[in-house]
Image 1 (cartoon, rainbow, N blue to C red):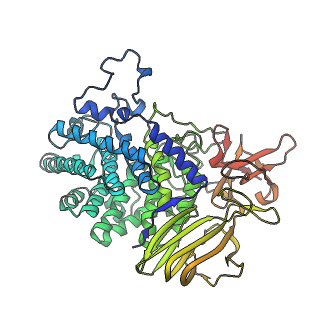
Image 2 (image 1 turned 30 degrees about the vertical axis):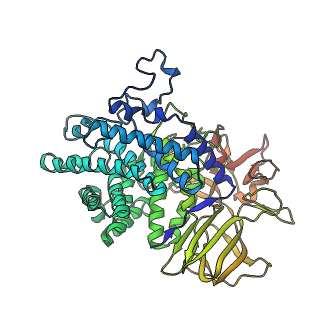
Image 3 (image 1 turned 120 degrees about the horizontal axis):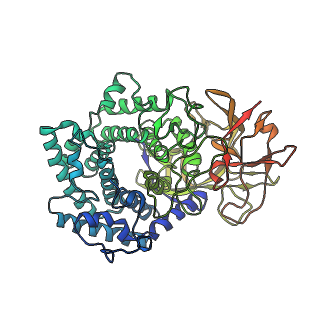
Length: 600
């Protein structure tokens, strides 16, 4: 299996967005992050036993309110995001904050006395057995918390996180056993899709059989039966409740090596991606539900593309890429990064927009820092921490390093006992800062020109494989540092492969990203303007395009003084009135915008 190589980000739009995320994680009060766990343990909230003015407390509200049944899910996301930043980028302050929180959770677990530690009461889990009572997704909440604990252990090595996780797993062992005797279906209720992956991951990390036994209790939902039968179990069903099941399939394949899990994961991908259309952004849902084939135009609204679905589909694509090495998964991820991860994160505050509206003259609705805490709030703070794992991969069996995404970063991998460092950066000759642009002699700027530096402690032979994006047009040039052509080859699998004995090497490559239209599949009169993988939206209402975008949109270039010193991917459409601006969807913040344009 191909393995990801942990990467430290280099200054770029991606590191900027990660830093916004990091500042937000540090700004949150630990007492507020723990508030519902503290209450469930029977401990008084500090200085809040009587609160005359709730607006002046440090408490979190929205979905984290003590009155919400889904309360406490956000801390799990916070722990996962914090642990990865600590691992990849380093942060003493964040590390101390995380460990203090874990220590408190251990205290609460001891106070509860039976392994239970949670932001919700145990009764929520037992209500799942009562068919006449509603309860809002208690296993969803528990999954996020368990995920935070196991991520903390995996990425920081803090053993107390595993101790808390193990004690809670023991509680689950007893609960599932009791379910099997009294109400077996309860194990599969309460939005339980993520539980299969959690137990499988715990088994992979520890080898403790109790986790594999728990995983097997969760590995036969009706969704899998429908996929095996060739049915479509997704259309009109809850998107984000279904996708985590596919993560569990992938984790079970790693844990057991059984092909049946991988085959099912691929069937899920086929049903979710290949058998249905997508918006130009890769979004496929409306109001949190999968859209059926041929109905994207019908469902265009202000409630498209829930961010959780983007995040979780990227995770599935990453799993499948590591199993297969196929570029179709990398191409999918790239489009989601630009038109989901970046487009649905506020560049100034780091806050998410729950949905990404597709209708004309849409506006993004941003969450607040302490008063919303939607599900997408949690996946958003995790999304920038995925950048570290999406660029470099190592295929030990074929002795190759794969560059899958073009996110500036530096990684180190050991090959045949030799330490090799690979650094990918923009090939910028005209700016004092690392950017995603090159300023060439003819003043042409491009985000898609890169320089790659390889350093090995001693001569080491391996293959460097660079993905050729599905959108790249024209010839792709790979050059040595002296500007001579590199001696690699492009193959039918979508890679440029360069095999040599490496020591200290530098070479450059770049892609031409065309402007093109991507029609809405069921509306021939509407299309999105694309530049490579990036949606270029019109500011304001939809425009009318009477020709191909490369012929009617005029590029705009301007020098700015930011991480990226040149205005990128900006265009305007000349009209009889004021010119119409077209800018990347991820740059839209508070403006009205339109993804789809009228085609004549």
